[in-house]
Image (cartoon, rainbow, N blue to C red; front, side, top):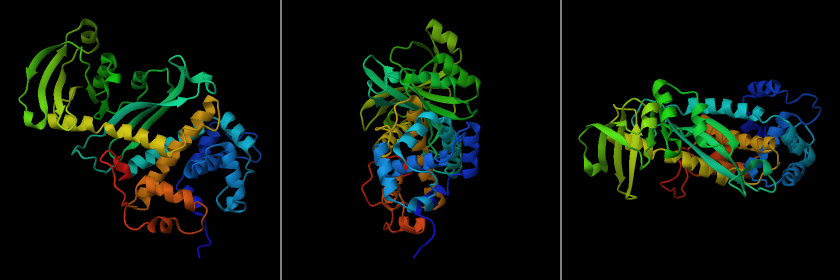
Length: 388
């Protein structure tokens, strides 16, 4: 019989505790705190994410029912609904945002060699945003579009491993195009975006930073044809052109040539027109890369379905952002554990196993190894690669 750490404690061993303390000290998270530390707060919220708790009272009841097991899982403070609520309201959410960034950096290093379906040495990102709807009467600070309330989660997803390289949480009324002003552009990398990010002045900044982009064109933009390359129409391609923008202001904002590619998807029978500043990639690869942008949509879908960001435990902006950043930390932590332990399981399966075994005292690898083989459930072709 294993008499060592609980599975929850073993899972949290993958969190860099020294760096976590640095994050806490940076924002004075434990200043004048006598009993319920930031680590206790993180453990409580991570427990809520992994076990699907719906409210603060739910968290308090379940944790208190565990009794002495809490100490062996790393809890040192007294668990109460009011104390956790105060911590979520008052302690700076940037503590957990910085922790998430540390975990993201580790996960990206682990998944750097992953194949994402396209033979390409360059780092490729998909940029998009999703709106998390909120109740206007409870979250009046998040109002947008009249009677609606919500926040946006802006994400730059590294397609090699489908690990988020950049995440930011902003009010929903702020347009996603402003994310391009805040990104630290990596020279040589490829950024794939939907047409909501089409702003030629900002795209020209990517060009000047020696980065590449692939973006859908709007139907009404005007251009002047400079050259046209031969294509194989049996592959779905319709054109491969070198163009210059014709309208006055777009031409002033983006004075360099662009590559315009027309493509028709034979499966969906939809037509697409892409703009890119990458003139060396084969036309077929450009279309494949844009199709890979769907991975960021699946990331949002997985986050919303399997992590607790629908029912919030606090009403202030700080409490909402704290919960979202801890949810992201848990997601990335599962990805790290999956890679470190060499598991052939989806993150969904891992989360389900952990929800039932968190406070058992046995080796964590043994808990996962009891699932016979890899996932046998039918996986949709729209499933995120990281979870296959």
